[in-house]
Amino acid sequence: MKAVLAAIALALAAASPAHGRSLGDRIAEMPDEAWGTSALFFADAGSTYSVVRQGGQEANPVARAIVGRRPSAGKLAAYAAGKSLLYLTGISLLQDRDPAGARRAAQITMGVQAGVVIWNLTIAL
Image 1 (cartoon, rainbow, N blue to C red):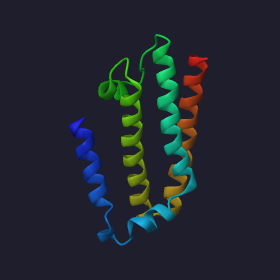
Image 2 (tube, helix red, strand yellow; image 1 turned 180 degrees about the horizontal axis):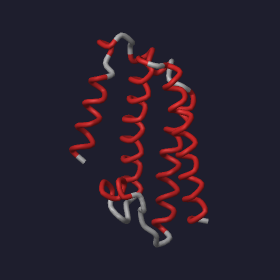
Image 3 (cartoon, rainbow, N blue to C red; image 1 turned 90 degrees about the horizontal axis):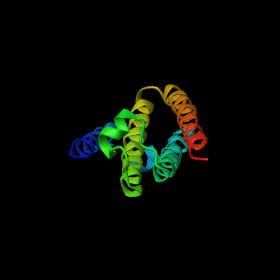
């Protein structure tokens, strides 16, 4: 968990206003798809928790290494929040170099994350 917090702090430092845009501008200019992906991270956490409550376990090896095989709702929410913060910071940094590429990356990740949520729901229902 300390490594995740350190990575978040580093990402935030890299995206500081010293790099040309204020935090407010970064938020305002964030592609809509990036916000959608962030929301899907939380939907993924909720659907994963539903699977765990039914006796399943976290199947994603990266998430499992951080939250465990049978994570609590709180751990999953914290994981989704950290993942969202890192993701949005990455998209914001990409926007500095390639705004169109940032939007395309957000569109692709939103599609992938939607697939993850749908897969979880097929298991949970």
